[in-house]
Amino acid sequence: HDAQMDYYGTRLATCSSDRSVKIFDVRNGGQILIADLRGHEGPVWQVAWAHPMYGNVLASCSYDRKVIIWKEENGTWEKTHEHTGHDSSVNSVCWAPHDYGLILACGSSDGAISLLTYSGLGQWEVKKINSAHTVSHALPVCGGSSVALPRVPCSLLREWQEQCHCCAIGCNAVSWAPAVVPGSLIDQPSGQKPNYIKKFASGGCDNLIKLWKEEEDGQWKEEQKLEAHSDWVRDVAWAPSIGLPTSTIASCSQDGRVFIWTCDDASGNAWSPKLLHKFNDVVWHVSWSITANILAVSGGDNKWKEWLTDTKTRITSKGRPWDPELKQQVTAVAETCMNGMNLELSHVKQHSKPV
Image (cartoon, rainbow, N blue to C red):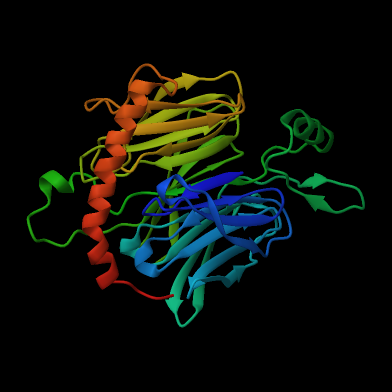
């Protein structure tokens, strides 16, 4: 269901319906299995790596309603925390920018979003946004119990919904805004510490993208709703930033459409959508490159495409499949990113914080 490279691009974590999370060493073109993590009791939907300044830490979420945080100690991977605070499938996990500390956002089919914050000595604090995305009656199954199925065949799910008069069944995706303040590259006085404001986006079965902001009292408040999709929002991805004035979010949906949302307003309230492409099938995932100039899109047509963004509008008008020319450009971007990561390696090691 998911595959994620770690910060340095040397390890690949995968998860599947076989209830496992597997980690591979992929250096020098190899594929060596180094860990097979067992702890979930249902299909595992997503995995997410934390920043390496906190060690080798991986989060996973599952249909079994659990979020598990794994950590490598002395070459051995172990479960370091298990969150069981949701009433239905947990569909998405995403780590906050490392500037904020070790914080994990979790979106669930029960409509809630949990935020897990590491407070030290193995302890995690939990904040919960209830009814983040509208939840109606759960789907009936044999025996009188109920269950939410985020990835069952759409035709079957629609039939169940019609029988029990259901509408939405929760949150499908979460994505953090970058810690870099929009416009700080241009307007921020040299040497002045930026004023961080924690924000993230979520997408749900109410066809909405919602933007959330942490208030001064530490509580989370819905800042804005973004409406353009006509069916369930399957994924959202807030683009990385180096401090340019424009903020960018990509979203994809059951309706087959991919939108790029941009905001040039310093207050962050004036978002405008632009249709990137209309596919003939559901679009499951969108993902930005680390430099935010490449967007990868994958869907139910068993294909994936990448778009190169334009420096002015941040989006091209035409998508291109993987081809030799694009591969060369992607390789060049990847090499640039890796050079930057190597420069940061010594800083990460010097400022590491154990979990």
